Image 1 (spheres, rainbow, N blue to C red):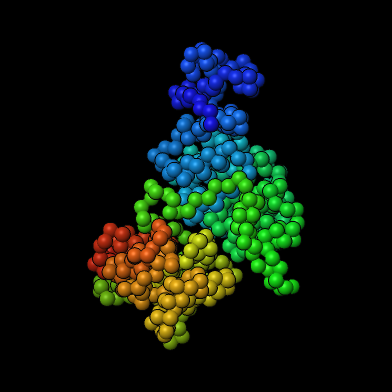
Image 2: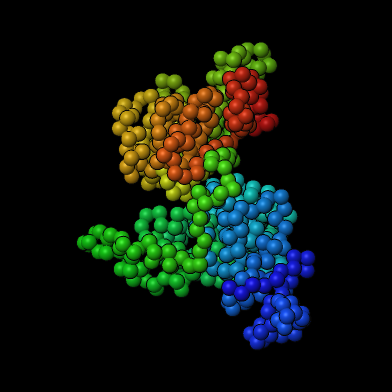
Length: 523
C-alpha cells in the first residue's frame, strides 16, 4: 500500500505526483519534494470521493470522517470506527456486528457525516416496532441531537402527518412501511435507507418482495443484523435481494442448490462450504463479535425503556392512586407497601395475580404488548443462549406461551417445575432450548450456565443478593464470551429498583419512598 500525508487542520491529502494521480485530479496544487528529493506531491481534498478513488489505486487513505468529523463526547470504539469506514464508503453494504457493538449509534454517525458534507439526503430507518422510539429516537437524541427525528407510527393519517414534518430522520416499523409506501416512494429528498434487523426479509414473503422494489430507488442502503442466517444459509438470499441484488443468484432455487444438498423432497442439508458461500452474497460487509470490542468491560449492563399499552397505563394509574390515598391516610407499612409495589410491577409485566381466579392479563390480544415484542427482538438478535428472569410464576407461564408463539424454544424453571437438574443440563450442554425462562431465586446459587452470554431481566426483583447471584450464573469459569445484562423498564418504580440494585443498595429499605415515586403524576 502506498502512503499519503494527511492534514487534519486543512482537511487535505498530499498524494504522490504520478501520471495516474495527475489525470485523476487535474489542476491540483503541486508541492515540491513532498515525499523526499525529486518526489513531488499533489494537494487534494480529504473527502469520501477522493478517498474511494485513491484506495482503488492502492493508496492507504484513512477515512476522512474518522479524521475530521466531530463525534462529540461519544468517541467510537475501534469496531465502530471500522464499521463507520465501510458505511461511509460503500453505498450498499451490511453491518453484521453482534448485539452490543453499537450498530445503531454507528449508523447515525455515518449518515450524519455524509449528510453534513452534502453527500446524501435524509434518512429513513425501517426497524422493529419495539425499537422505534426507545432505541432509534432515543439514540438519535443522544448521538446526533442537532437532527430532528419523526417516528412514523399510528394510523395511516397520523403516519402521513408525521411524514409531512420537516425532519432529518424518519423512523418506521417494517409492516407499517407498507401503509405509506407509495407516499414514501415519492420523497426524493429521502435517499438513505437503513434496514435495522434486515433478517426479517430473509424469506420470499410479500413484505420482502415489496422491499426489493422499494429499496431499489435508494442511493444508499444499509442492512443491519447480528444474525444474518437465523435458520439456515439460504436466509441470506432474501436479504441480499433487498440490499445488494447483484451479489446472489437471481432465483431462490439457484441459491438453495448452491448452499444446500437435497436429501429428499422434504429435507435439504447445508453443504460444508455453505457459510462461506452465503457470506459471499452479503458483500461488502463488516462483522464483529461483541468479544472483539476490547474497549468494553467484560459485562455490559444496560436498561431498555419500553412503553405500556393503554390498558396497562390505565390500570397502573388506578392502582397507584389507591395506594397514594393509603399513604395519605397513614395506612401503609413496609409489609403492605411491598404488596402494593408488587402489584404495580405485575401490571408492567402484563399479568396481575388475582387470587382464586389466577392471573389476569392487562393487555388486549389485538393490542401488541411492546414489552413482549422487545423481549422477542432481544432474544432473536442474540446469537447465543439467553436467560430471562421474571419474579412471578404466573408471568413466567404467560411468557412461555408468548415465546412459543414466536417460535422460540424455552425451558421453564420456577417453584412449580420438577426435574430442574435435567433442564439445566440440557440448556448448558446441548443445543436444546434457546432460552431459559426462570424465577431468579431458582437459579441463584451454584449453577454454571455459561452456555448463555445474555441475561434479560423482564422485571426487577427487590433482593440485592438474589440479583447478584442470578447474574453470576453466566459470569463463571468456562465463559468464553462477553456478557450482557439487559433490564426492561416502563415505570418509575422499576427504574428506581434497578438504580438501587446497580448501586448495591438494599431495595427493601426504600419501599415507601419508591411507592411515592410510583404515583400517577410521575408515571
